[in-house]
Amino acid sequence: MPYHLRSQEFSFIQRYFSALAGPAALGLCDDAAVFTPPEGRELVMTSDGMVENVHFFSDDPPETIGRKLLRCNLSDLAAMGSKPEGWLLTFARPPHITDTWVARFTQGIAADQAEFQISLMGGDTISTSGPLVLSLTMLGSVPRGQAIRRQGAKKGDGIWVTGTIGDAALGLKARKGEIEDPSGYLVERYRVPFPRVGLPLFGLASAALDISDGLVQDCAHLAHENGLHALLEADAIPLSQAAKNAGEQGFKTCLTGGDDYEILMTIPPEQEKTLLENPLQQNIATQIAHLTTPHGIVPITRIGVLTEGQPAVTVRDKHGVPIVFPTMGWSHL
Image (cartoon, rainbow, N blue to C red; front, side, top):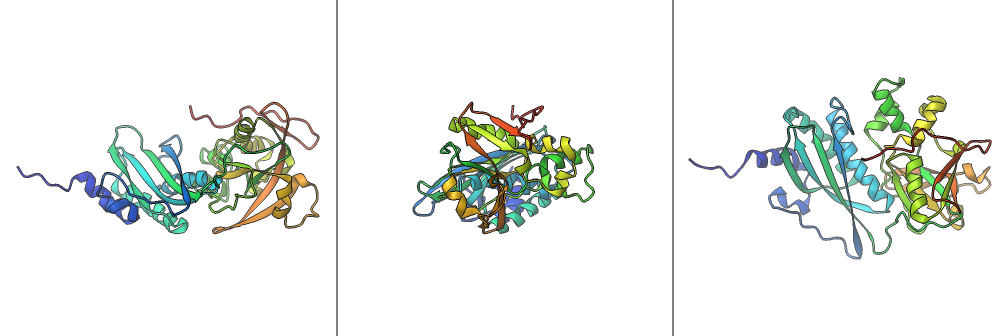
């Protein structure tokens, strides 16, 4: 009996993923990719996984699932000031994922590849009897010695965030039918985040990370890594109008729900003047600045300060009273 070299798996890869592949992928025909970092730059690598009915719903549009997976990893690179270079994908496919579904999934990724100027380097495809499982590894690069880490902040550094906080967490609630979302804005923010790729952090930020587990919990990570206390002003935290409409209980969800994929950063006082459009603005705690990236202008807002004390987080209201939260944020275990 003759054996055909072109296996079903190889045909599947070529049919749906070859159009996404760049030079490092070697036509997706070899066991591994070959990539040379640009001269004078260091590699930055990250990996994120998503599981059906844990990180996305079975009936979510396949295009948004692929884009969210890609963008979560892009956000990790953005927090370190890294330029994305390419990505690898492990695709564990259960029987209910049809060829049409895969085609739509890769179409969504193709659109984001064009926007963020990256390409597929390789990966793996396997079958599973369980839910759809996706794992993506992203490679990026930074000039040597310029990666921004979670460590490096000092007492007195301001705490800043990009964009608005909490839309995705409320979008998940809307997706479950727990709150109203007449415009669909919140659900869309949950499905498709905006990674802040190209944010010029080096020379400005002393430390940074992306907000994926919830603002309070990720602030706690930052506080612990630097041995300092994070003091946040509730009134300074930027919310979209849709989030404001969710009221007081919605506010607590915004700060602990996760999936923001905004950047949380600390900026030394001597650097803040370079961020502020108008140094005569009102209270420093509510000042808003803007940074220009290749993907547009990103608003950044000062929401607090690092102080001496227990490595933890305090969020206080306009009267100076600490706010109590039922949970700090998302747990991965």
